[in-house]
Image (cartoon, rainbow, N blue to C red; front, side, top):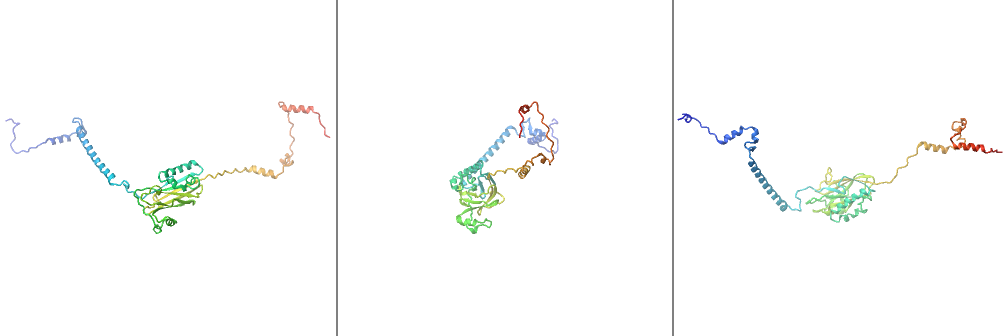
Amino acid sequence: MPEDVMVPAGEYKLVKQFRREQEKRRKKDLPWSKRIFDIDEHTLFGRTAWAWFRIVCFYLVLYSLIMLIVAFWIGIFMLAIIDPNKPRWLKGPPGLSMVPYNTSAITYYTHLMGEVIPIADGIDNFLNKLNDDAVEFFSECNQDDMWGYVSAKPCVFIKLNKVIGFQPETYDTQDDLPKEVPAGLDETLRKYGPTPKIWITCEVARGPQPEINFFPGPYYEASEKMTGVQRVVAVQLSNMPPNSEVTICCKVWARNIPIDEKFQGKGQLKFSMHMLVDTGKKKADPPAEHNSTTQEVVTALVPTTQATLSPENRRGGLRMPPAPPREDDPNDPNSKKLKNKISTEAPSFIF
């Protein structure tokens, strides 16, 4: 028996090696560059092109099915479960805004139509969008067809923004009013109550005191819909002081509309009105110079006599020497004519 076939006598341990273990050992010994891209095996990160194609298609189909299922249930929830006439997301109380400009300052010249007409057009466009004959409804505030911006009675419109589903909790009696309400609101409540209304007050915070009028009144109609003119109050500033800035602060009063003094539009709104008027006064003529005025006064006081105007008196009484005789200019034709005239005329004697 040949020796390579012979098995030694005695106990021995058989070590088994599987193909997978050999494969792992071989990959472990590979350099890092071949682990990323092995050109011999045509693999990228250990996967062939066909393997990458299969796994990408699998995840695309999986996530597409997930998105279709989610979109299906969202559509059912939005269209069938939620009422389209109610808000889909809960919001806070309505805020305030103003027209013609939702800014804190309005400055214009009453005699410049280029500044007044854009303001009036902005108000007309806003009221026409209400679709409630709002222009006719607020016609009392538009006596000059420019919403008072020419006749020193400008109107601003305070709008209570619409929040679907908001149900206001109003102050219906004078005893319900809080302590911080301005003076006169209890009288307003007595006059326009007892139907539920959201009250509005406007006061002058700084500057002169114009007269403040409300159209149709200092309130908003409290209803669940609050559409059209129910959400708008016209505030007219009569007897506006010319060339003076007036700051107005307006607040709304309801139990569930808090007033935040730090933020514009949250229960309160401040704006300034600066009406500039051309007075038409011209600048006065500048005063005459002191020297000319003094000379006129001296001339009026001192008589112009012959002695006063004589050279001796002008020079302190000194006698001036006689002027030298004037030499005739040979080139002057007047001097030659005068000389000929003197020589030809006979001398005249006075007795």
